Image 1 (cartoon, rainbow, N blue to C red):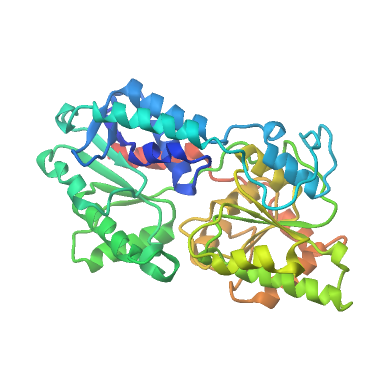
Image 2: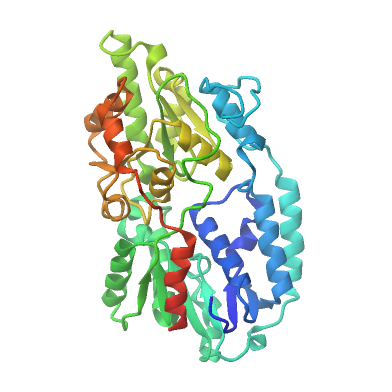
Length: 440
């Protein structure tokens, strides 16, 4: 980061103190916060409150960032992650040093991280009390760069009116996606209007916009033009893959082919199609047209339950045909996810829309073949190694899974070969693009 003064918006990280695991936006927010703190210039935290922005010194900023990171399970090694260990056991994985686990007792039902909500709420209350004692925006040095990477509070334009009184401040915003606007059917009621307000706030104030994909960048530029406002400089910087995602490291050998689907369980991720595919394979097996029930591939859903996922949840809880072959996992550590990717057969990413699709490149870095929906951003980040299918092509997805399960699968060998020599996007590369933009 440039050595100029930077005020990083901590508002989302403060609110996430009560959560045990991060979302994709949380990961980006944390990566930026730590990168800002690693710089040599003056550094400030900024928290939006009803009383106006509160400015926190570097030490308080750093303490909040590390309190958030400590409350998540991101840095726990696979060997110490009970969710990963339980999953490896349920999948019939071989225990030992190569698995990085001690075999626990077999469990049933969704696998989740142990609770610790009370401690996180206490830390959040203490943090909010410290925040309210912070100074006002007049404490920021002239020419400070204001960096906002989370979307939070942007639908409250009055929270950013202070920028009109400090025209010397240079705001930079990170836009993760325009999905609530382009695909309002996948959001909460009213979310399309709130996201449109966020984009208006950005269009009014931004000196520059950073996006995670060229697809999102094009959408942002078109949207701002549609508002009749002046265009903003847009920098594309693909999100980095954590170093833990690689071919070397713990893993295990599942007793049968195992497929992963990563992401919050919500309609746009298209979990319902996958579950219907698994149900169809189970019914085919029951009729003697395929592998027996004991030979069905496993599907592991990595992610918490999200908004308006009732149809998916009904299948997970009440569809007897898939109970033995579909497993939910929530609260898996980053190291546990990396070990799981090294152990699986393929990643299935059938989303209808994405801003980026981080699991696609995490899987590729781990040497895991990828089948992804044929949408622009997947083509942007997965061209050269992924197979692409229409997200509505249920029979095509069943055929792909069947091909990949076959002994000596030529399709899997071909997909794996495409990953030879693959270099995943890195955070160093991401920040190199971001820093060049900010320096300008």
